[in-house]
Length: 430
Image 1 (cartoon, rainbow, N blue to C red):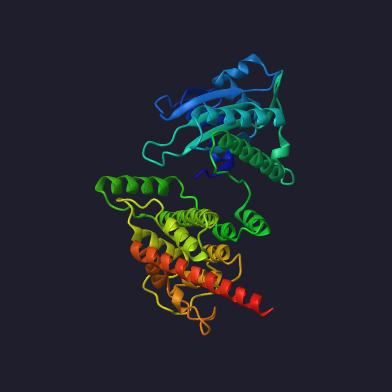
Image 2 (image 1 turned 120 degrees about the vertical axis):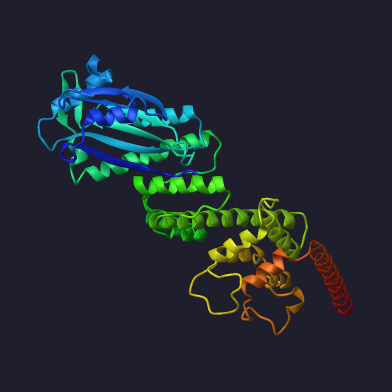
């Protein structure tokens, strides 16, 4: 799934950093810092896929020389606590090609040049060989002064000011999301990224009536592991893979991040199954099936998704039980306030048209037999446990389901015949 990340950092002398060292490290080259008299050699660095420099139209020729460029940046700053450079760190979608990743990074860097008149040095990095192989990213290093024909001139205070800096960065975040989404659309991908906060996305989902998405977004932002914890977790994943066992986080932050990712994965799978159920129900109804038969077919299609030899159906039942906040062995104990949006939306689909068939479909979804639907059985009846509902749907033999479908069809035919007889009788009485 495509994810959004853009962060802005500063290279400060007060922190013991220099623009020459930052540039050399990110592009994997050797740069001698004339101000410090030090050589920063990172030519052995691996994983650098592409580097390039972009400058304003009237920039001097020496600006394309990386060593000269960043030494001039250092020379233009005279204070001991100067901010010599600014870094924009971008996550690149793994779903698009390397050419598209390069192009959208170049487009973003060119917008920085056009908007602020600065020099921009770009390094596109491949995923770490021991990490997540989807982690394509780019480091965009910019000067903090405008680059003009005579060299570096005024500071870009619009990014430094407390009043305007946040607004400018938010606009650039929106641009980066737009560039990625265009590339994802060109590649035929359904996924999209969103630069807005989780709260803003949740409010937008509620406004358009998408309660399931709102529920998924009702969470805290993912913690940042940091270099040390990230390295430890990466080694733990590699070791677990080699030993053929399940990965278990080794740090407290790693455990929090891992749990959050598992929860989001469960929500995504539930959404996929809900979509399959909705599409199957619609297709069955268009084919002339009754509401009960179509509803059962939808449930069977949803629970059969991706079922294979290496995928245990029990695993999904357990994950689904965790999503609805109940365990498989839990009975009818009271549950905390909340709503099972996936189940409610599936029931809404089957309740669109009123009548006994619609009530029977909902009654069966609630875990009861269709023969229990009578005068004394209403919506206030006992709610079955998750275990009962899942066993009724997931573990019911296919032959039994087919027999029930046939019985439902026969009962529907009998009711139709009775209705025709009653209509004929009323006609004779007139």
